[in-house]
Amino acid sequence: MSEPVSGAPEERFTRFVAVAEPRLRRALVAWYGVDVGSEATADAMAYAWERWDALEAMKNPTGYLFRVGQSSSRRYRRRHVALPPVPAEEAGLIDARLPMSLARLSPRQRAAVLLVHAHGWTYAEAADALGCNVSTLRNHLARGLRRLRLDLGDDNA
Image (cartoon, rainbow, N blue to C red; front, side, top):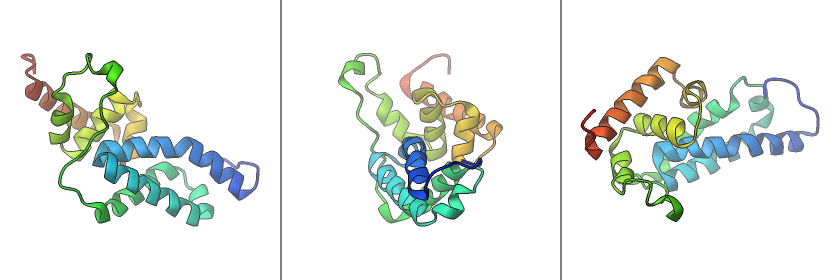
């Protein structure tokens, strides 16, 4: 959104939300689980609307909103991470232990693994959203995948 966009502020915001909200929700759900991630996304989007003039001029508004979502998540503390259920058509393709193993990863490792391997984000996109550099993302990804392999019994971990 760093380049000028035509239209009324409401139209520009609507276009921004159509692109940014799903990506932001995926990142926050990967980090905090469905309940807290969804609430944090809603809070971040409300914040975006309230401060649209300033946010629109930012180089990385989605990354900024990820940080806003992280801050707002504190009020939605949960004891465990509830990840989205596995779709029925994919249930036979995914190890039933995977959701529990994912929940045991650190938030950064879980977010890195889910954003890159489940949602198909590039390393640069995931690093940008998580507010770290690509080498840090690679470290979280490698550690998360190694732990998943150990938890799931892969002998080559």
